[in-house]
Length: 187
Image 1 (cartoon, rainbow, N blue to C red):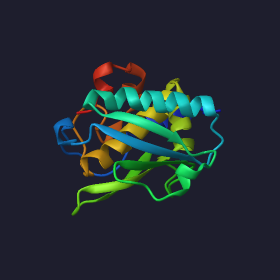
Image 2: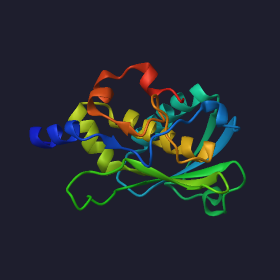
Image 3: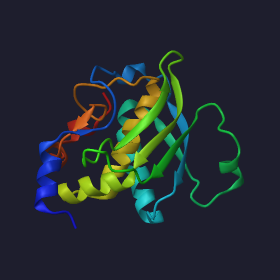
């Protein structure tokens, strides 16, 4: 259970997703279709994972990107082979609490800035659960939006952030509560 003090601290501090805040354009995404493998090391149910993947797809379709999801939580042959071109990986893990007691980022993407590409994104489920509890929002939707944000970095090959929309660098509890559609489109 999240206390009012924790909720207030979360609301007071901006919830950083990763990196610096500059502009990212959906036009920079050359990808139109992608296969994403999801590896879940947490206790998420299959139904929550599926709802999160649907929420991520809904956000990425605003950038004209269609995703085929492969749930690798139940290891299959396809999940053991190295990723092929146009295949990306999302890890769902629990993160460690930051030294200052703050929750830290909701996810990150490993992007080679020089090569403008990446394959691996990580989303911190325990941190998202805390934000969902503090904001009274659906955790699956918030997980999906965080997945879409991190995949956006991989798709654009950039660690940069937009000023608004899904790819903004910080999400506040107020924005999550407001839940305006324009806050969750890929820009």
